[in-house]
Length: 207
Image (cartoon, rainbow, N blue to C red):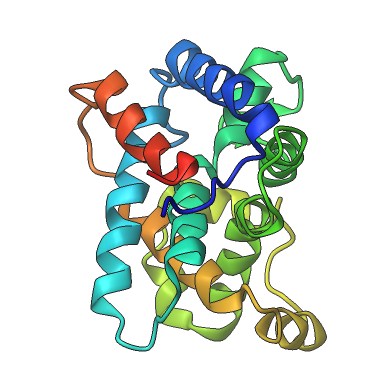
């Protein structure tokens, strides 16, 4: 029996076409602040690191469907940056566009992605803020770009904000996705874009 699709069937073809278009049109642009890393390379590297971290962290237990949610959210977590390229967003700075996580989350929601996917996309910024708040060593290891955007994104969380985030059902998945995001900055390009795209899209279709 086939696993259920992540995206509503009626929107599936359009979602695939539009995401492919965004990645193809704007994915070659540099990932903000990381020399030799493109937007699309960062996206697919995040998929690889998400899968790897799921295997390495013993306490991370998810069913097949929710595991796919996390992987797909990792793949598309910066899609808001590409939407801002398309819309020529004037709030873009040398470190990216302000609130790109919200832009991406709203975009995925309009395409019919379920709550965990678009919310995890939004939470990758809050997860960074949480880890900076609770782990000094984490901050020391952040890239220059991540540090530069930290204050724009709200800086550290208050005690109440951190407590609220920790109680969220998506908390652990958000931290895992953030760790994968931080690792996915190795210079290089995607050799076979269409092949990689189809491979990840199978998770969306439930194949």
